[in-house]
Image 1: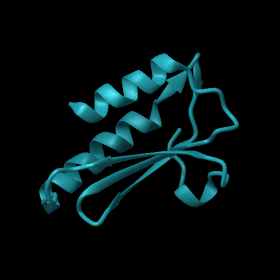
Image 2 (image 1 turned 180 degrees about the vertical axis):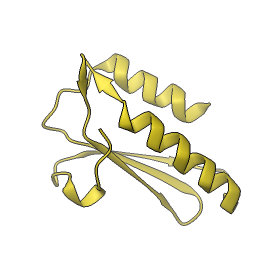
Image 3 (image 1 turned 180 degrees about the horizontal axis):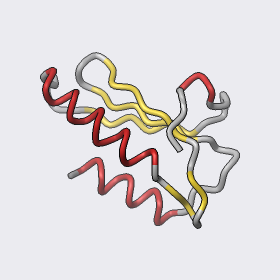
Image 4 (image 1 turned 60 degrees about the horizontal axis):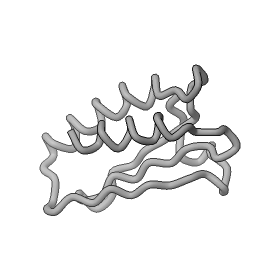
Length: 85
């Protein structure tokens, strides 16, 4: 379940994925569309994960998720594979 970054608790888990170069505007638009679709449906054990993302400095993808929910290892692995693709 995609939410705003501000609506997540301060205890939210955060992952930062760096790019080895600056992203173009076209790449940022594609990443935004892909992450919006993915995180809107990201689930762990059948429950949608409250999550948010930001693109920062044209080089970093910041993803945060509500730590009050248990996020299973399989769901975390799926996120990592999604980012790598």
